[in-house]
Amino acid sequence: MTKTFSRREALSLTAGGLGALMMYGSTLSSLAQPPRNGFLKKRIKSRTFNAHVHLTGLPRTLAPNLAKAEAKPFDPQMPLSEQDRKEAIAYWSRFKYGILEYDSKEQEDFYIRKYIHTRRNASRGTFEDNAERYLREMDEAGIDTSILLFLDYSRPLAAIGVAGDPDGSQVEPMLAATAELCKKYPGRFVPFAGIDVRRGKDGVKFFEKAVTQYGFKGFGELVGTLWQTKLNNRELCYPFFEKALEFGTPVMIDATMDRGFSDPALYEDILRDFPKLKICAGGAGIRVPPVEQNGKTVTAYDRMLQLAERHENLWLDVDDWQVADQKGIHRYLDYLRRAFDGPARSRIMFGSDFPIFEWMYTEKEWIEFILKHVDKKEIRFTEEELTMFFSRNTLKFLGLKN
Image (tube, rainbow, N blue to C red; front, side, top):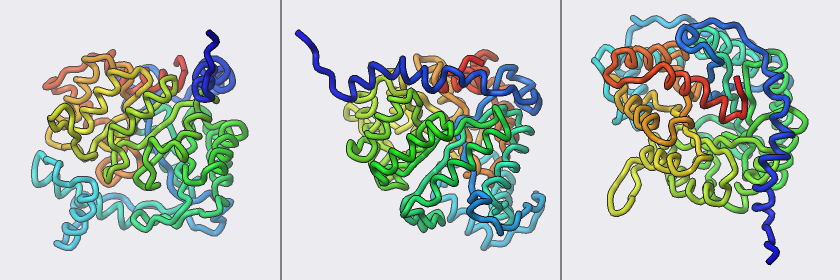
C-alpha cells in the first residue's frame, strides 16, 4: 500500500538532508576562531558557548541621535536605603524571590546593591553600543561564542517597557543590524530570529528572510508568556516550526515563565508532532509552577528533564538559574549532576539569559561562582562533563564540529 505523507511528515523526512545542506554545509568554515583567552578558557580548551543571550537597544539606523550611555563603576560599599531594599525585593518577586537562599546577609545586601546600581547606571545606548559592552564581558569570561536571540514584539508590553512594533517596521532593520554585527565579529555570535508568532504569515516571511537573506541560524526565542500564546498553538506556532524544520534550523523556546504558557505538557505536544526538530527549552522549567504527574506533584524542571531523557531532539539550557538558589547553588549543580547521569547528558548547555541578571553577576562572575562550587567537590563533575556543558553540547545543538 502506498503511504500518503502529510506536509509535516514530508518536511520531517527532508529536513535532515535538504535543510542540513542549505544551512550547515558551510557554517563551520564561516565561524572564525576568536582569541583564546578569558577565565573559562583556563578550563575549557575547545570553543566555549553561552547558549542564551539577548542584546537590548535599537540599531543606529533607527536611533541615530541616541547618545552612548556609559555605566558607572559598581561600588560594593554604596549606601543602601530602606526604599532601595524594598524596591529590589519587589523586583525580585517577579523571579520567585522566595526560592533564593543566601549564604549570608552580606551576600543578600551585595545583590541589592548590584540591582540598584544596574537600574541607575545600566547602559541604555544603541544595539551596537550594548553589543560592544557584551563582547567585553564575553572576553573577560572566556566565552568564545554566544547564541544571540533577537526578540520581536508586535504589541506593547508595559510590564517590561516594550513599546511594540505593530507594523513590523523595525524587524528588518534589527535583522540587518544583527547580521552586520555577526559580520563585524565573525565567530562571536550565532543569531536566532525570535519573530512574534502573532504576526502570522507575515511573521513566517520575516523568519524566512532572516535565514535566507541575513544568515540567521535558528528560530527563537519563542516567548509564549510574553506573546500570550501557547507553544502548541497549531495556527500561530506550528507554521514557524515547519519552516525551521524545512531549513534544518534549531528552535529556542522560553521555559522559565508561568501563567500557563510554559507548562511542560505543551512541549510534549510539540515533541510528538515534530520529532525531527531540534528544540531547546531555555531555562529548563525553572520558575514554572510544579505540575501533577501520576497523582504526585513534581517540579516543572524535573518534568522537563524527564522529557529530555525521553526525546533525543530536546535540549535544555539552564539560563535563569541564577535565582534558583545562591546557598552553594546546590539546586543548580544537583540538576546538572542528574542530567549528566542520564540519557540527556549530551543535551544540557550553559546559558545566562544576559542581560536579565546582570544585577547579580557579570558573565565572568557567574561562571566563576559555578566553578567555585564545582571545585569544592560537594557535587562532583569530570572535566569531560564540564567540556560538554560549556562547549560540546552546544556545538551539537548548532550542528557544528568544533
